[in-house]
Image 1: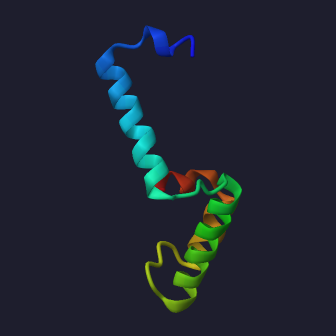
Image 2: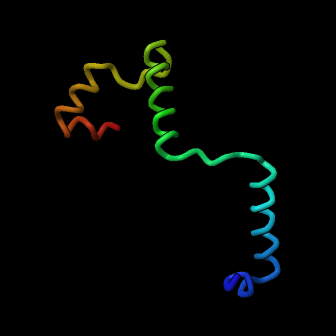
Amino acid sequence: MQYWSKLSVVQKESLLGVAKTYVQSGETVEPVGDRRKRMILEDRQNYLQGIDTFCSWEQVKQMAANKEKRSAL
């Protein structure tokens, strides 16, 4: 509340608008670990299906063994 009194009317309205939109969206914030796991599983599924393959398995192994080859990412 100490910061609230320092805000202008426009800033307060803007902040309230953001909060209102967030509450109305009903979205829950996904924890970073869960998000990372979901993304890895999606990438794995895409790879297994041949969709959006970024690197071949051989390229991944080479990048893991040689730091110089990682700069392509």
